[in-house]
Amino acid sequence: MMVHLSFVIPCYGSENTIEYVIDEIIGVVAKADGFDYEIVCINDQSPDNVLPVLLRLAEQNQKIKVVDLAKNFGKHSAVMAGFSVVTGDYIVCLDDDGQCPLDRLWDLMDPLLADKADMTMAEYPKKKQSAWKNFGSHVNSLMSRTLINKPKQLQFSNFFVMKAYIVKEILRYENPYPYLEGLILRTTNRIMGVKMEERDRVAGKGHFTLFKSLSLWINGFTAFSVVPLRISSLIGMICAAFGFIYGLIIVVRKLIYPDISVGWSSTVSIMLFVGGLIMLMLGMIGEYIGRIYISMNNSPQYVIRSKYNIDEDKNE
Image (cartoon, rainbow, N blue to C red; front, side, top):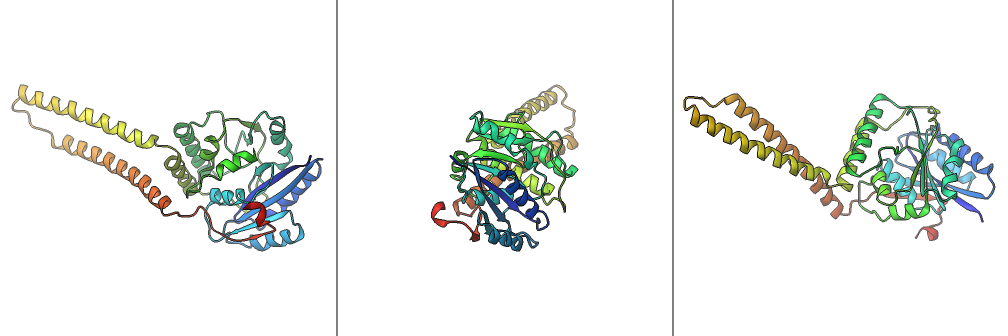
């Protein structure tokens, strides 16, 4: 029986690289017997001419499918848009810059075909990206381990394969601010890493900035964990306990030494410290409430302007 692979590629600023990536996918699949493919490319309102390139390729090959988003929604929302139209038995996610080692695709597929895992991903000993992006990735990884119980040894990367049932479950999440790591980890723990080397970019430079990494981090902890709120409550109780103890110390010292003067500097310092904590906690609560409000208003994950080479009947 033919095994159908769906490749999902969010595209942004990749007019000079996407054709290379697609050609390599076609070549890699052609070398294996018993596999068919579709390539779903999502134009996330790219500022360059990647859409005309995609449309030209789609016209030449009906297995290349294009989803054109109405505006820039971000990488994870673009991937969700791609998930909404895939039809494969296994879904392969990769970047549009040529860094993913596609020649190692079958190393990712083997554990899935043997039913040893439900998802496999590339595990890079060293990521070829800027120091700022490395910092953002480190913060995001630390957040995932702390707040959504990601296994310490598990490294999420830009190149992974999953079974279709995982995508089907992920698509049940219809709220804005999708966070793929959280959606995957709440679906399965049968995830396996496969060591391989990340390639250099074919051309151009990365567009995933430190700000985008931190925004993704905020998405993760506000959408999939209430741990920050519990930490806020714990800090509040600790501060209240310290305040009570310090108050008793002041009263006792005043009774023992009636002439002692209360320190103005220490009082102001405590007020500034406690006030800062209160504002931080209020901001955190406000972030949760704001996102709840936006979700209640049915703000979309993405808006599709048009589709090309996609059978609407199969995706209803």
